[in-house]
Amino acid sequence: MPTGRILYNFKKKGDRIKTIPESDITLVAEPAPEVPKSLSRVIDRRLARDPEHRYRDCTPLRDVFELVEF
Image (cartoon, rainbow, N blue to C red; front, side):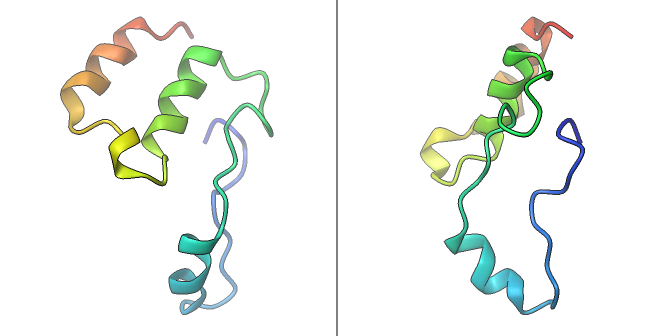
């Protein structure tokens, strides 16, 4: 976890159904500005709410990770 915290915190199992579709996803750079921007962009894209904005499979993701500067 590059941000040092979990994405969602549920009090009850049933909260997942309601909370995930309704909540905003925090970009990595907000709670963890020290995370390299190249890595932050990859993580944010993986977590995109709209499937059209995510990587379709692992091939482009692998290629991007080769370019990430740690």
